[in-house]
Image (cartoon, rainbow, N blue to C red; front, side, top):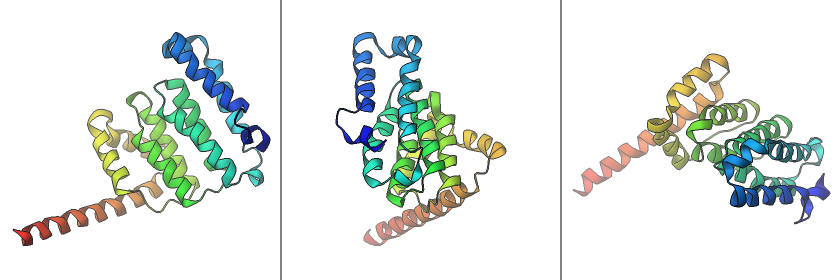
Length: 195
């Protein structure tokens, strides 16, 4: 598995490049409708990289993350779904370090799209359930709050809390919201003193 990722010309890179080129040539809609197997194959290859959790190291994760990031950022729904599956399996299989978890959470929140919002937030809940996530950055939290007007984040989160355990996520969310509120109050007080 490491040998596949270690080469710049690995099969995963080739498939990713093939998907990018396909979008340029025939468009994303055609590619999603006529060639969904590309996205499945891409996800299967990525998933095979961490079949043996003992072999997953920082170097492998460093090579794996750009593929996940590209999938989550994609305009193609199929590509986003395949990346979300990979993230879910990754957090179920491998114990990740805080900086990797923060990167994944930030990616899931900041690159959320309306048509896959429920899947993205469900994946975020899996991350919180399976790993130890102690915080969300202020900017990431603000982005989550800004999404609500277009995506109805709170409704999706409420629906998720009826189906799955969201306790760990809400514990971090409320802690960060309180800290954000305190920071805002401190800024207001310092502005009042300056005036």
